[in-house]
Picture 1: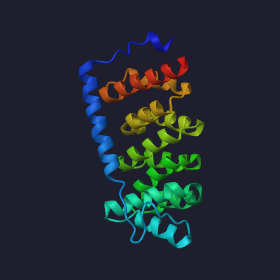
Picture 2: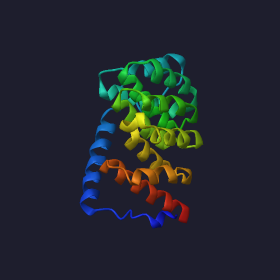
Picture 3: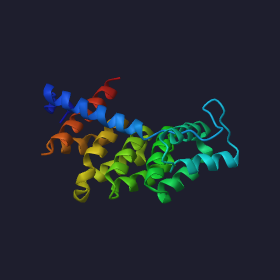
Length: 207
């Protein structure tokens, strides 16, 4: 059975609705990423120990601008701060976990995928969404296998849509069978997300 055999022609009204939802999510996502550490600017990034500690501490700040600059600086520093970000994602407060999840995705850290998958399986739906978005940015076989496992786990139904969207972002053909199962989902959001993911994978296979 080929992907083209599946009726995945989108309903125009549903596409408009999904576009609106994705826009809202993207706005919410970007709004949680701000920061401005005193005496530190985007043009003056330092990777000395004290500065890095200040950036990490600022991930919990109530000041959105402060968080944004800290995240930008940590992303630019890159691999050096990955262990600290993973530590925040595992043991920090809720705000720090969300911000660290995003930073790890932007850095493209594959070693963070197991922890991000753990966040997806947790009780916090918002953290699960951010973790799924980061996994979608990182990709890789560990990410694909972990997301497929979530889709096939009945106890993780509340995470299926996020997992499907992440698989669509990755675009790996190994996810096709699992996504086909979601095409028949009774949940309209899961169903449409799976159709979109299959279209993305089909397009990648043509290129």
